[in-house]
Image (tube, rainbow over all chains, first blue to last red; front, side, top):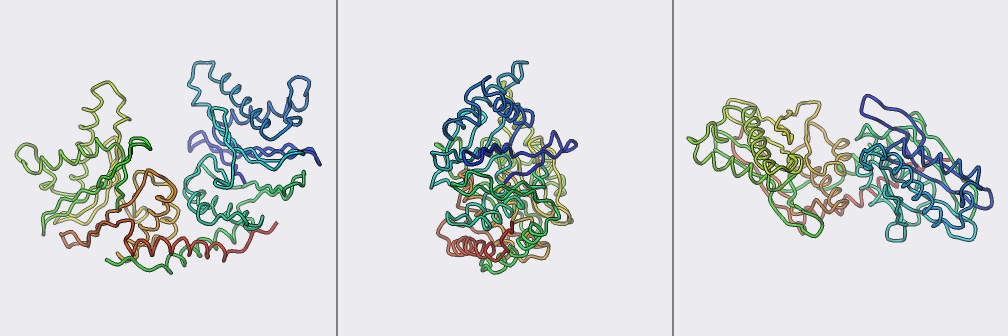
Length: 227
Length: 227
């Protein structure tokens, strides 16, 4: 799940999709979520896209990488290339920083999930750290830590993501609706449910309002502190 | 409420009280919570302390300011003085940054609460923004936003603070127990309940464990997302 809020200061707020999908039905699904400098993340996605359309120019293209690990390297290398070029003007590379979550599956391998740092290197999720966040991560982390379980269904996971995003949206102007949601069922090699969740989505409203209510009841149910 | 964790990197973690109290029974209670550079915050507290013991050296001392507003100015000015001196060596003043929450009451005035910025200027709480956070604020903010009400009792407020701190402690190594809690009943002109809450405090354990449980139940009680 990704939000769509971008800003260059509170007086310059826009909406951009931060989720990019490459799909070859029956062979690969690759999903890239981005955070950070929008010019950088768009350039990375555009370069990956362009090169997948003219694969002879540059191999492997993101539609031809042999594994998710090689795909993560390709995204990381493209990110380094974009940041290096942006910083040629003399500005610090930090100003152009961006990070990505890369998930997907390529036939012959398992579904894999990577977090790609602004430096272009990356880490992979595992049983100890089964999920990643990028961008404005702190507000939404406590509920993820507490409510995440390995056997959540897609429906429960979507609910958890909405609760986490909702906590962030309520606390910080730099994250905002609509949200983009994509599910990938393992070994399906095609994109599953996809949805853009707007402010007035009845399911989102029910979860957001219900959560405020449920939190307050949960809080009241606790014993008061005794002095 | 304040935590006690300070760090200069993950390999250099210590415990320091971040709550400082000046009291003149029947006349004033002033409480100062600090976040940021420990050398700066300790220097500010020490200077305020020293000068209150030799008030002829510098007036007004923090035990002689005529109002909470003037007390906030005194703390802000002392902070600027400390940061200015620290930066004489040529380092950026940002490296020595610190912020404070100042609360209290001086006879003749109402209880007042201020947030003092690293620049030494400050804002005051009001009905629209009845509480302040400093330091690692993001993890604990969503629950404050949702569960805070103006008519919470001291016991409920302490519970809310514990839940908010607990969310932060679970998410970030830079915040840690023990916690220091102080209550000031309006117009009492003396410090109310004071307590250091350790890891094994039974009340804290009940609230922390209960909250994990209550959150999970609250989460399960919400409708799942429907695709």
